[in-house]
Length: 335
Image 1 (tube, one colour):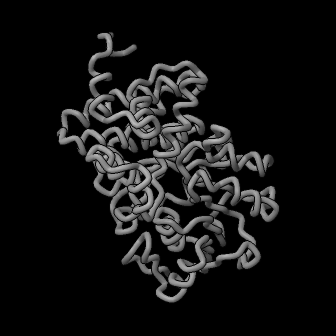
Image 2 (cartoon, helix red, strand yellow; image 1 turned 45 degrees about the horizontal axis):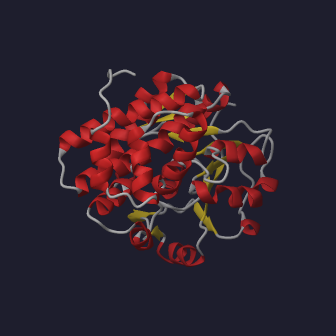
């Protein structure tokens, strides 16, 4: 695998998918961007802009929009999957027959499927077993990235050549990519940080300041690492871009959907009302349910993460959950 691809298909036109499509269009000759929602598709065709999710960023002329699988404008050697995790299975059931064995697949979704506890790349791999999927993850708000802020991400796969190829294709202008062979660890960090970000938001909604958020970040990354190590991931992965890096951004960044969701929970709003009012998916909400099942399955002690579950799914008040956390027996730090 050498040189740059002539064509690329991006599956998903949310904020991150759109910003990555615009980024690639500066290097790749032709980019096709799949838009699931018909009305959004018509609006984007009309205005050449994703007004729903990435307002103010014009789509270059070499980006072709399409809405139906039957209207794919060309065959491509590079596919980028950027669809919310809970909808990935439906998407790949439809598009996998169109994917060639030599196609490089990059997954930029974050989350854990509720019904199977599979990570995004594992869902994709169940449909295209011949293709080794590369994961793209890291601290990357789409709006800041699209406006040109320096952004660092990690590309991970057990196939080093494919990960390196993706790294070289994407790393230009304001994006710098790093390499990892720990695909599961990179995906796990990117998924579970959303649960911790909800916890950070809840603490802010309760009126607490940076002390509480710093404690949540520090103990949160310890919990993520604890589960990751049991699942065979490398411990250093969680101190990297997809672990600590993404966690800090999501807990402190005002653009974070999961943080904003948590703030509203902390202020007393109901989960169902918040979700109905949100345009974009807060992946941490379904991931919290998946995480609860994982920690029970593997008998992992993750009290902070479990507290988020009890608040969202067992109607425990944030104040009661906090009291229970603070009254736990005292321990050594690195246990």
